[in-house]
Length: 217
Image (tube, rainbow, N blue to C red):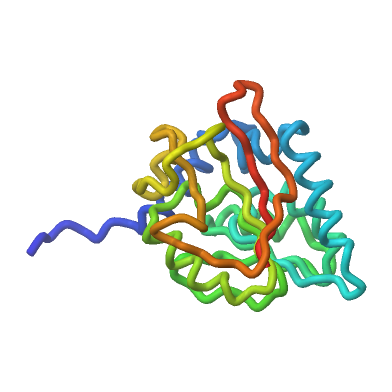
């Protein structure tokens, strides 16, 4: 038996490294979730489409944001909800969010969404989170989120036809390097929602990639 110490959970370690070393950019003394959470060409259409969905309800929804990051996007959606719950695996990031964002009906928790129990809510948001995870982790998460009434899923995908769901090691890039992307409707996940609707699709400047946001119920 090996005497080496047990290694940290790889996803947690990878995400902590990204923020500690500012691998997604940003200022040296703050947390930054990358251009995908700050570029107006990506953020504004997304916020417009998701907020339009959230405004549709006479009784506002409770929303659980799995992988809320630096909360640049969540803060723009929270006003249209009954309660907004931000979750991330990086404890120091969540503590920073708790300090900066103190509005009523706003909560933050440090959780590993593939392992820990998730809070009750009407709607779950997963914005460019699954693409960083292995198929095994995605399946564990999917087993939990099917209990929510609405799922708003955003994924970074190749343009045109591609082979979905090529497996990766969690935290080691995303599937675009393999000309793949996450599609929950395809094997090995075979998710069968009652309904689905594309809320937003953005073609990136390179014309080879797109960011697609889909509403499942």
